[in-house]
Length: 135
Image (tube, rainbow, N blue to C red; front, side):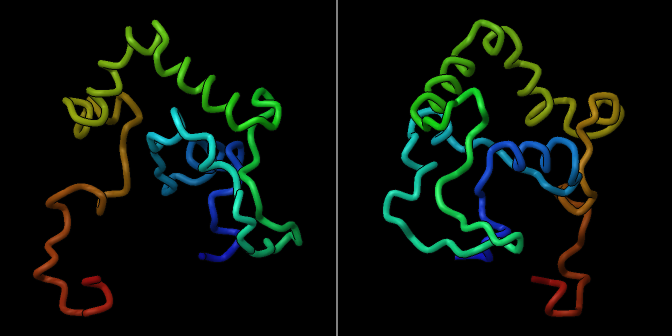
């Protein structure tokens, strides 16, 4: 396992990091968020370590509305994903991720910009001579 402080351990802090606090923290919701509550629980009691603040890492900390229940959390996520609102607006997400708002003026207007090295073709790997930077 990785260092305890770097493990996925808290829905709320992960959301804040990716949406507000850390512009280089790019995350996606994996399918398990919508069908597999067990991925949020350390049911095998693996020793995931102790964070710098002294707290042990165990189950993922859920938002208050989940009431500590991973099944409730996943059920509500699935209901949101299958909602009329998402159905009516899914095309906007597709435009951001796959469409005309990926780059350029439309990406800027949509606040859909990322660090330049994340864009295909912006770095010429063959021109990098330092083997560590090539990796």
